[in-house]
Length: 175
Image (cartoon, rainbow, N blue to C red; front, side, top):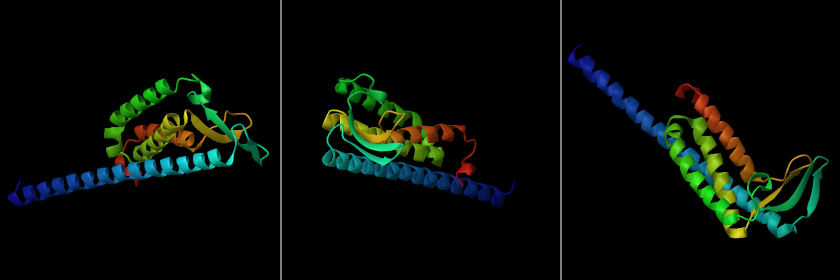
């Protein structure tokens, strides 16, 4: 291999590493932007519900969808009510473990980065409710499902996107 070819291969390697670092930064920024957007929208909507509706008040939006103010003092579906400190602590531990587990995946995969942003933003939104208000404010009420909120949507859809990101085989799939 000639000196010129070797230099050219080295330049290609350096350029590829630079591109990978840039893409990893972009994914980190995307995660942060999505997390902050979900957190902000969640907190704004919950505050509007808390200030505009009494606990237990319901307003029909559509025949199958109500706006109902509920305070969930447990975890999903109201399990473990009255244990806010324990639930908040477990949520904080889970967030830390999720962050560690996703760190490498998020750097390589935009789908996982967006999913992680949704998951983190929603989790922090519900954690803030537990700490500041003694329970999570839920308001989206479908007739056949327990009430939930935007943070819950972020957590669920974020987890689904993270799983989808895990199933992706190539960075080229991110487009």
